[in-house]
Length: 376
Image 1: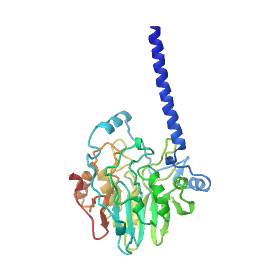
Image 2: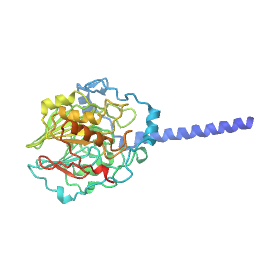
Image 3: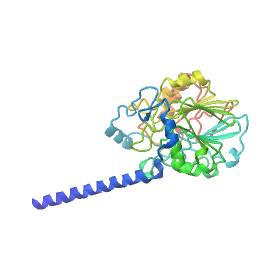
Image 4: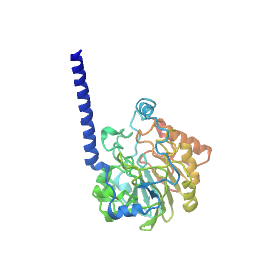
């Protein structure tokens, strides 16, 4: 009996030691890895603290929002790992882009190219703008902590992208602000436009402060004649365990000479869409999140039917659903977002475009509409 007790104590000791090692490695990783970014300090922090959207040390949504919702962690983890067709069993199609095709941007033609998930390459008024250029393979601080991208190639490599006039970021979650992508992009971007608090991340990754403009909700600036306005979204932020709500999240209004564009960022459905539509609409295209939703967190991501309603609220003439078709981040099947948004758009007579990744939309001329996800 005494021997069994000694063996038991030894096993417990080994398990405790392993747990301790894991905790130590996690601690060292979180406080030394550059992927987690940095905290705002000095003048940038002072500006954050004067924002009417920042209270008690945190950014707030316009409407009270329970980020965790009705989360059942055990069931959610089991379903995430085992239940449903959450990722395709094939590499989804990608239309390749040559450097020559996007080297010259025409002045009065507006083009948008979806790179999967929420990444949008925009050609507007002769300018090249990339929105949420998450072009990495995994939306996580380490490859072992996330799911792989659904497509095994990009429309064009980051190295072959032309010089960009601007990069716009919606918020600092890993599936929108990617450390590896920024490292490869930063030396070919004239200027970064970001919500409050995100400049600290970019500066820690080597982007000079003079090339970053931080904006609060309803603030506007100009990109060589293109009007850019940060607008509310209903979501949250954070890259680590203790930094939730420390940076802001935004949607964006991009108005050129002939085209008016709305980018929702990540957002649950709320009254801000109607307010944006009344103030800045109608929009030639509404680029709307549609994916990674669940009934357990209904306030921070829209259901596809709400995506269609939000498009109507902002007075969007054409809907491009995004935030799907790249990563497994929720419990629904990978085609559920586009199937449901297609059905709802048809029922409510909302014009919809569903391009293949890498396929270009030309405002007023070309709006690809094909059920490519049905054809393996």
